[in-house]
Length: 341
Image 1: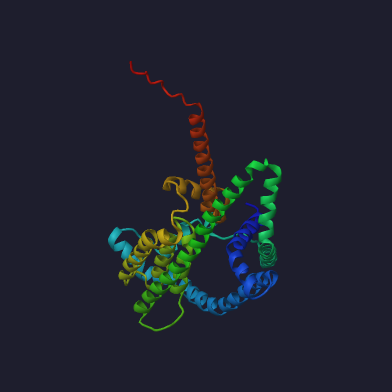
Image 2: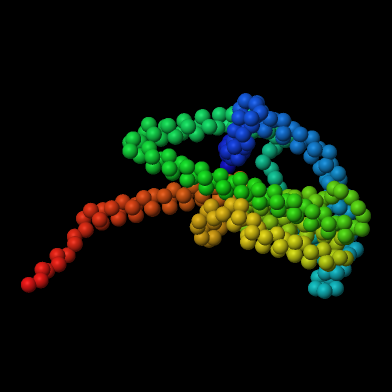
């Protein structure tokens, strides 16, 4: 998918999510332009400054783990594998046989260099600001365009369909963000506690906390996000503690299992509801199709797109049923009842 299309889609999604907050601030604090500027420029700048202070510590820890991992692997993991499987898989053998040049699927190569990244970041912020500032006008223009290009008798139906789509997508997207935030707090604290118990040292920021927060927000990728976060946590456990403390991997499995169960049984039904009222097989198909067409962005947009298709399909189906019942009533022939005597 072209980079500019990706930026426009993500900016549109961000404008849709933030539009209620901007509308609330517009009526109580400041103008819509100023509130849009705060949400697209000021708040991201504050968050970025906080990340600049925290991320270097986390990445330094990860870098130390990566540098020391080959030696730890040869001394602890390779002998364990050799003892239980009979295979000699030392780090030199792995380095010689792993096709690093063919593992591009594991690399994030969306931007070629820092300058290109900065240019696209600025473009994304500007597009998001314009869409957020003029969001209500854009929606009204689209609705008016549909009114002007369709018969007048269709106007109530168009408005009703717009309202149903907007309600379903709103409940889905904002609910997903709320659920993912709750799960990010849960996984961040739980994984950080694993690090504290395993290391025996008290510290407030760790790579485990970062992986936990990432796991929570990976929940935005349906069905594959949280298991992927669990795999990342397991890899971090192997790099940090090798196979000395096997309880760590059991704890990761238990934490992820509890998180998935609470999400499916409690958080998603209560916060999101059944916004996408289709069978799970079609959700899997939509996720696969989104991944094939747009990669990670396609997976993110798979459920919103399926929500639109589901609402439209269900709306037109009920409209057709109503029209069919009216025709049956109109042309229904009642049998004549013979008179007595």
